[in-house]
Image (cartoon, rainbow, N blue to C red; front, side, top):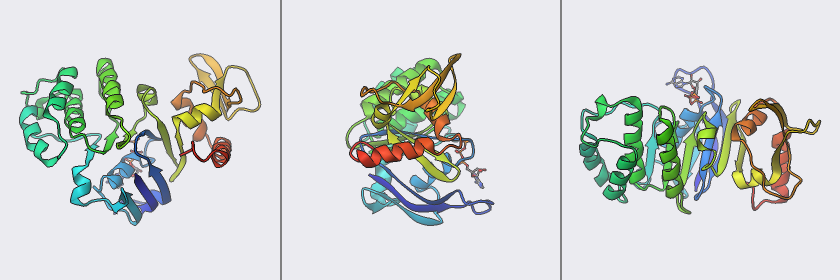
Length: 283
Ligand SMILES: Nc1ncnc2c1ncn2[C@@H]1O[C@H](COP(=O)(O)OP(=O)(O)OP(=O)(O)O)[C@@H](O)[C@H]1O
């Protein structure tokens, strides 16, 4: 369990505090999609969780212990949005990294590299952007860490590679592992995300499991006054409404993101109310 309590952060020369008393919990077994508009602080939050920068106030704990110790670092994989890679072949780099991670699987690394069509003897700093990203994903997933943090992993990947990544992440999901993925392309990850966390105006405005959302929200093509959000989706006017059918609905995460950040508090109030009535299924 990853727990963030009363977190506040301001960059040393930054003008504003990014979060004010932010409280959030990420549970094991889930794949969380972290969404927020540009500059909302997703990358900063992920860096804080990875221990790369220190909070101004608040605590971040992993399995009840403050983050940062050796034990934590051996069980954390962080995929940054952009990175400089060394002038080493992927194979050589893997051999340097593997001993740092007790659960590293060389066979899993080779399997992933093959699925991504990576040439493991290629020097990493000469790779294309997408090849670099896939190399880091292959290394990261092969660590088999319990906490995996991926900042915009689909950015720069071709269509086939996105499908491979979805498949791999689904395979990596297990009851002991927490995966947090920041993304602007929720539709790339729609099928695998099991929890949605939305940052907006320095706060977490949304943190619910997919199953909870499917139970309590639905998309309707009928015009209604009772909707949380309305907009054109695929050329058709659609409304996000309360799900009263008793059946789990099919949802579009980007549509929910728009509803949660459109300035209206309605959807947040409604879901908070539903969660308080059925605490076992809300995050
Ligand atoms: N090193 C830094 N020094 C000062 N301010 C910074 C620094 N890095 C980021 N910021 C500021 O912090 C805020 C949050 O940035 P961050 O990169 O975390 O946002 P983001 O949600 O990941 O954005 P995007 O979706 O555009 O990637 C922005 O206003 C940004 O300008």
